[in-house]
Image 1 (cartoon, protein in one colour):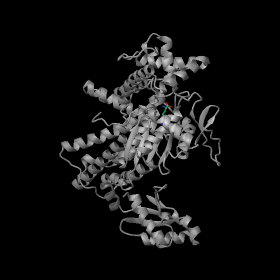
Image 2 (tube, helix red, strand yellow):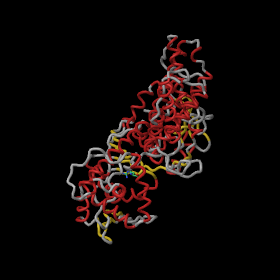
Image 3 (cartoon, protein in one colour):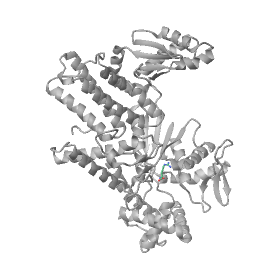
Image 4 (tube, protein in one colour):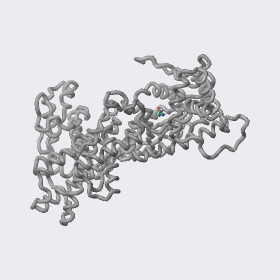
Length: 584
Ligand code: ARG
């Protein structure tokens, strides 16, 4: 149990003994570290229900809690309780830290599915895909470390109108391909008729043309319908589109160090669509409206109007909403307790409609959590969504090359890794570049939009990924030097120096911060702790000359502290998807 929760329990007991709610005993990290390490503010709120002055309650609580493990308790102002824990207690918690992280497992473990990444096929990944991938991956790692059973699903966009549009686009360009000939009975060629470059170029081209040409748009709709009804040539073509784009997208996700347990897509549920729609009609949940089928999802106390969900178009074709609803059905059957949709905030209405329809239709059991984990936009220096200088979308592979180049220059400027073998230097440049990219994203709360600032993100100073990597590498090198002198980490002793104590206090926050980050689905709390640890460590190392210390017990304890800080930092960075090089 974390130090803070242990204290909370004791204070909770004290409030309970006074006949007050134990939740008043909640201990928080002090806002005024100069006055106390922790505080309890519950006496003020308790005073109202108890009809007693808050100071009196606070004093009664303090009297009950006083003991060996707290060094100092005092009542301040109208009834705040200030807490300073005993140094021995603090040291004990630092020593137990390795188990602490695992002990968050005591909460009930849940089956969680995280839906993230979500590119549409036909597209090479671009900057717009970055946030969902990075945030979703971080959440997956976080929930896993907390002991949950977590599955990541990419949920490809592979069964809607874009495919119909692509079919029509290719037919316009190469009408003689067998896929378009209704008389042709196969077999279809094994070789894809397009590569990813052509596919990525075809898609925006046809979207633009369909916008100006109603007849063409209609043709794309018909092609979508025919694909969904199983027209063989179209299905064969769809398979090619899928293979070609998956190969390219996998490469980009690999480069980011992001993977998925399930490579499902909209098409995974294609056989569920018709029976589901029929069931919803029979149950009266789906109703006809101007030839289409809709599900009313408005609720009486909606502040904003929530329009009905469009279940099928008037031609009977299925949409993004239809496949999303059927995917909820699949996930419910597979027994997930919680499904997190890590999707751009602009899709909140779509998801709200899907979630409501799933409840209304009984597709999602009442206790299954369906939650939109929304995020803001990645902006360019002009404050608008990130584009290339020419105004096009920036490919993810180009973006990765960009951060790697910048990392290479930074390493050169800082004279780091310069005399290492080429291969190692390149690997480090890649790791630093990816750290810059991911930390630059995850340091922000997911809902805030942020500006992609290559210069700042790749700097070895400030709140950046490379700064934290460098810090961890430095800790490794300290431990290596100690090792060379046959000095080993030993039991953690009670702190004697302020900066040592400060580092320990930050370290013991680890389990609480992980729990909070998970609860709020907010990896920025993880990023923030990693950054605070780095600062505390630097100040500690400045004041405490670990390698030169003369008292062997103290020195071993300090080495233990270095090791614990390294382990914690490595864990926190790993949760953000950031690797720590062996040396730099
Ligand atoms: N393919 C979608 C898009 O590109 C994102 C999918 C998100 N997940 C979901 N279950 N809707 O916008």
